[in-house]
Image 1 (cartoon, rainbow, N blue to C red):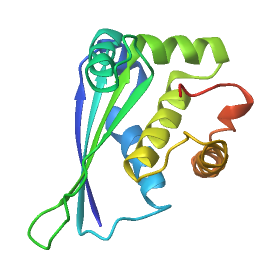
Image 2: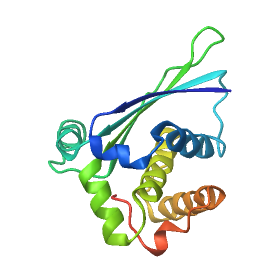
Image 3: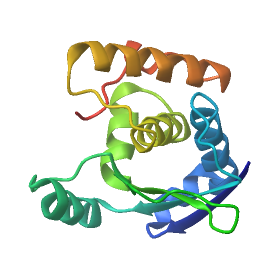
Length: 162
């Protein structure tokens, strides 16, 4: 499987992550490995944005007029073929919210961003946390994925926006 990432760093604060592409690729690939789509090529768009853009997207697509740490936009009904890649969806991260949560929880921006990228990718794969049992399953999966990336259990120190 070939993973094609379309990464757009729109807020300079994200440059504090260092190698944004390597961090993003590791997080997304680890999440995809839990439920690999049957496709030769998978494409995902990632916007490292600011709170303003994420608030606008949240208001427009979810009816919630506030920023959040990450939004996931799965693209449905796009079957991959040998000729066409699987367009899995898009992720949008809000810098100010993510950085504030990282500071509050005393984790690095890179650790929190990695967690959010894993969380968002799991949403693109069809996971959700609307019901308690689904939330528990998704959190356990996130903890397992992050452990494989050398990141401690985020639910000991943080809460992902629901």
